[in-house]
Amino acid sequence: MEDRIQELEIRVAFQDDLLNSLNQQVHEAHQVLAQLRADFLALRERVEGMKDSPGGDPGQEPPPPHY
View 1 (cartoon, rainbow, N blue to C red):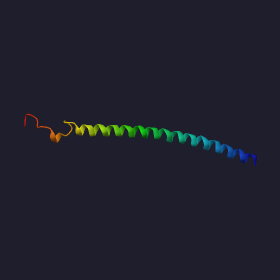
View 2 (spheres, one colour):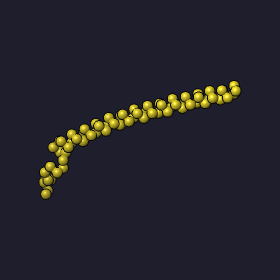
View 3 (cartoon, one colour):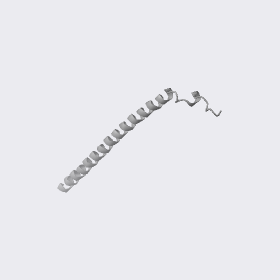
């Protein structure tokens, strides 16, 4: 009986370590995702700003002089 209890305690310890490791990985992935989302939103704003600028839409540019 004592051996069985000890085996269960060892399993629980390994599971706790695994759970902590997985939790850390999920936390790091969440941080990376948040940074990527912020970068994406900044790029979207930049592209939208380029559309509004005079040189942003090639259809509104005058033709080059050689035409």
